[in-house]
Amino acid sequence: MTATPQERLDRLRSSIDNIDAALIHMLAERFKCTQEVGRLKAEHEMPASDPAREARQTARLRSLAEEAHLDPEFAEKWFNFVVAEVIQHHTRIASEQ
Ligand SMILES: O=C(O)C(=O)C[C@]1(C(=O)O)C=C[C@@H](O)C=C1
Image (tube, rainbow, N blue to C red; front, side, top):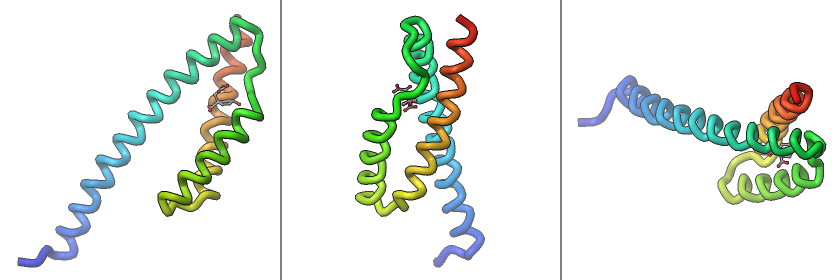
Protein backbone atom coordinates (compact mmCIF):
# COMPACT_ATOMS: atom_id res chain seq x y z
CA MET A 1 0.00 0.00 0.00
CA THR A 2 1.36 3.44 -0.90
CA ALA A 3 1.74 6.05 1.83
CA THR A 4 -0.64 8.99 1.81
CA PRO A 5 0.79 12.50 1.35
CA GLN A 6 0.14 13.13 5.06
CA GLU A 7 2.04 9.94 6.04
CA ARG A 8 4.96 10.92 3.81
CA LEU A 9 4.97 14.42 5.34
CA ASP A 10 4.87 12.97 8.88
CA ARG A 11 7.77 10.61 8.09
CA LEU A 12 9.88 13.42 6.63
CA ARG A 13 9.07 15.66 9.63
CA SER A 14 10.13 12.89 11.98
CA SER A 15 13.58 12.85 10.28
CA ILE A 16 13.70 16.65 10.37
CA ASP A 17 12.99 16.50 14.14
CA ASN A 18 15.94 14.12 14.64
CA ILE A 19 18.26 16.25 12.50
CA ASP A 20 17.26 19.46 14.34
CA ALA A 21 17.86 17.74 17.69
CA ALA A 22 21.32 16.59 16.53
CA LEU A 23 22.17 20.11 15.34
CA ILE A 24 21.19 21.58 18.73
CA HIS A 25 23.35 19.04 20.56
CA MET A 26 26.31 19.66 18.23
CA LEU A 27 25.97 23.42 18.64
CA ALA A 28 25.84 23.02 22.43
CA GLU A 29 29.11 21.00 22.31
CA ARG A 30 30.71 23.62 20.04
CA PHE A 31 29.77 26.40 22.48
CA LYS A 32 31.19 24.36 25.40
CA CYS A 33 34.52 24.31 23.51
CA THR A 34 34.41 27.98 22.62
CA GLN A 35 33.57 28.94 26.25
CA GLU A 36 36.80 27.18 27.24
CA VAL A 37 38.68 28.94 24.42
CA GLY A 38 37.23 32.24 25.74
CA ARG A 39 38.52 31.55 29.27
CA LEU A 40 41.96 30.55 27.91
CA LYS A 41 42.17 33.69 25.77
CA ALA A 42 41.06 35.92 28.67
CA GLU A 43 43.61 34.36 31.08
CA HIS A 44 46.43 34.91 28.60
CA GLU A 45 45.23 38.29 27.31
CA MET A 46 44.82 36.99 23.77
CA PRO A 47 42.49 38.85 21.35
CA ALA A 48 38.88 37.61 21.21
CA SER A 49 38.92 37.23 17.45
CA ASP A 50 41.43 35.55 15.14
CA PRO A 51 40.69 36.65 11.54
CA ALA A 52 43.35 34.32 10.06
CA ARG A 53 41.75 31.28 11.72
CA GLU A 54 38.32 32.46 10.54
CA ALA A 55 39.59 32.80 6.94
CA ARG A 56 41.08 29.28 7.00
CA GLN A 57 37.89 27.82 8.48
CA THR A 58 35.69 29.69 5.99
CA ALA A 59 37.67 28.25 3.06
CA ARG A 60 37.49 24.77 4.59
CA LEU A 61 33.74 24.95 5.26
CA ARG A 62 33.00 26.34 1.78
CA SER A 63 34.90 23.43 0.24
CA LEU A 64 33.07 20.88 2.46
CA ALA A 65 29.75 22.51 1.57
CA GLU A 66 30.48 22.22 -2.15
CA GLU A 67 31.32 18.52 -1.78
CA ALA A 68 28.07 18.01 0.15
CA HIS A 69 25.97 19.95 -2.40
CA LEU A 70 25.18 22.61 0.20
CA ASP A 71 25.26 26.27 -0.86
CA PRO A 72 28.75 27.55 0.18
CA GLU A 73 27.31 31.04 0.69
CA PHE A 74 24.89 29.59 3.23
CA ALA A 75 27.72 27.69 4.96
CA GLU A 76 29.75 30.89 5.23
CA LYS A 77 26.76 32.88 6.53
CA TRP A 78 26.10 30.20 9.16
CA PHE A 79 29.76 30.26 10.25
CA ASN A 80 29.85 34.07 10.45
CA PHE A 81 26.63 34.06 12.51
CA VAL A 82 28.06 31.56 15.01
CA VAL A 83 31.46 33.26 15.22
CA ALA A 84 29.85 36.66 15.91
CA GLU A 85 28.10 35.11 18.92
CA VAL A 86 31.32 33.40 20.07
CA ILE A 87 33.25 36.69 19.91
CA GLN A 88 30.57 38.35 22.07
CA HIS A 89 30.98 35.53 24.62
CA HIS A 90 34.80 35.89 24.54
CA THR A 91 34.52 39.66 25.03
CA ARG A 92 32.14 39.21 28.00
CA ILE A 93 34.44 36.61 29.64
CA ALA A 94 37.46 38.95 29.22
CA SER A 95 35.54 41.88 30.74
CA GLU A 96 34.67 39.76 33.79
CA GLN A 97 38.33 38.93 34.55
O1 LIG B 1 39.60 29.46 17.39
C1 LIG B 1 39.48 30.51 18.06
O2 LIG B 1 40.44 31.25 18.31
C2 LIG B 1 38.16 30.91 18.55
O3 LIG B 1 38.04 31.82 19.32
C3 LIG B 1 36.96 30.18 18.01
C4 LIG B 1 36.37 30.89 16.78
C5 LIG B 1 35.23 29.96 16.28
O4 LIG B 1 34.14 30.02 16.87
O5 LIG B 1 35.48 29.15 15.37
C6 LIG B 1 35.78 32.19 17.20
C7 LIG B 1 36.47 33.37 17.06
C8 LIG B 1 37.74 33.48 16.34
O6 LIG B 1 37.80 34.65 15.58
C9 LIG B 1 38.04 32.27 15.55
C10 LIG B 1 37.39 31.08 15.73
